[in-house]
Length: 386
Image (cartoon, rainbow, N blue to C red; front, side, top):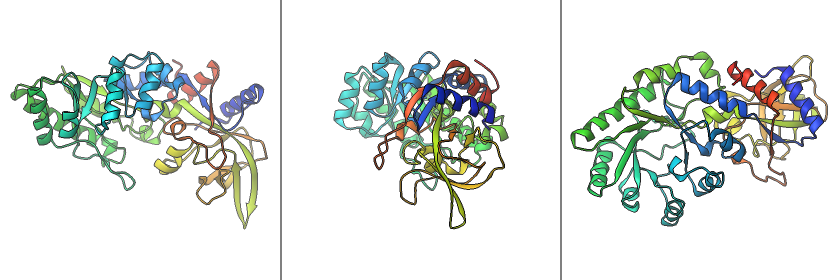
């Protein structure tokens, strides 16, 4: 939980600086702490999943901290290039692209691609360096998702043979696990993926195709999810299964950027209608809370205020006048008054990137916190100042 004291300091700073709401408050110190935590526990090289949060402030802060970036669309690629990231440090992960998209990506100087079918392989030039993506035994498909990428070992072996015939470099084998995998608390989807991946690597080596690296993807539960509190050995389990003498890469997105932004909002009204308490905010579930309200609502959204008083149940609603702009159905909040500031931490993943004008609402601006408050967030979440 974010302390009421820190929320009060944030609110006081925002009022003094005249920060408008809603606004995303960026805490770069959390990225440094998150990268350090991941390296300590997992020990793999890091390719940041840009799709999780592509704001320039986030990318600029991560640039000196990670080995590389991966993108899934030309827009995010352009953002990285505008920030001065070398094309050599960027991999294009989406294996399904149009000829026009491929032309744009190649023209930008990117030569590294992910392949999982013959169509993608044949569209690429011989100079492309490819990663073959495996569908792991448990791909983590949920009731809301459909795993669309990755193929079987037999298909990938055939693709590797064809790539070798064309003189193409295969730089890695990869897989990706979604967050709904069974046995995630024991790291089982990753352990199964690594086992299958190493079997494929050995198979290719026997056929004369050497692959120097494996990529275990991302999909790690968010760094501030209770999951890591309940299962502190999650990364150690994965690390223990990684082969020695093999270059290992991972692709975290949510894990790193989740705590990097907090959404600041103001109370519009605290009222009781038909016996039910409703707290209305000026932030919308549509325009900045996509991750916490639609992708992983079961994780719960933390709402912190500097207000004291006995908390009472409340439904928290956004300003869009329909039945779906619901931020939280069962929050516990002290009595609120119009204009009170509230802080919703851990909204840095799949939030800013999904903001858009909704019903006349402007997207939340991003404001960087001063160093002391940024460090306060890092200490709150990771217990240290880095």
